[in-house]
Length: 353
Image (cartoon, rainbow, N blue to C red; front, side):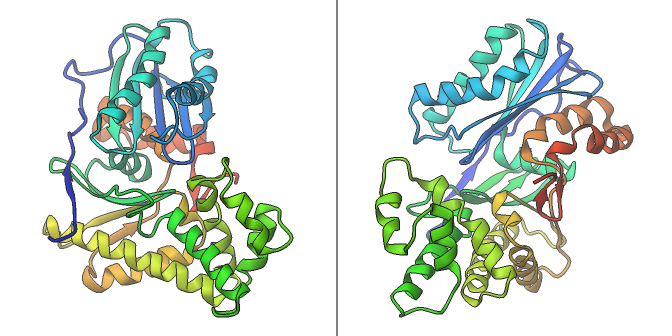
């Protein structure tokens, strides 16, 4: 297929060859993306212990900055358990297959090993973590729209579509939606585009009196992909209030995401697929999810399309439950919704936010 890059992923180990977790009473699960690094510690009975957060740790940051963010996320978790007490650590992060990614994983796991030298480190792909945390499933399709975007096929045969970055790809992502929202504001400011409230929202969001004053802000040293992507939320708000320009942006993003997902489903000849939406951009407005579902179901009317239950940081928690409890995991999974409620997602929004 011209213009598409198919990347085969190495499957993470779904089961422990020894039949259970190695020594250590606690397990760490972490997830890193373009917006933040989150980590959660839990015990052998799947009770919450601690959580920590750091900033983004992708390739645009120096090793020093990555170490600082890793330390911020790990510190509350590591200090909550005795030295040597971690038996297993999971980390999910954007999949590139690059040496840089391997080094970033090592930075994270090395910090954990300083605390618990005998810990078993288990990298998870971004798609695996989203699917596990979002649906308690091990096989399915994940359509991710966060700061960036991509489509993952997870299971015995795995693949990834996307990963081109914000300059060449990230179609339908939070960055793309935020950028198009700002461009719509500029077009209305210059009166050659559709009338929109996005101009006013942009000024409020970035603390300027008029849109032209955004130039030194946007092209300043501290402004980047994350700051553009953050405007996605306001595009969603404008769309929910009936702003036509904002609605068009979300529908275009939905089409891009549905088109990528359909190609993935065709690749694996799926007739009644399970598709999970994941990532922060879906939280901006339900218009994005509804439009995506409508467009995908035109090609796959039997598709089961769902929103996620938990944030991806819970991927390692869910995998541990499934490994240990197997088909008898339903009671434990139900309890997790109460015990780890801070990571729940309700109606496309994270609980408590």
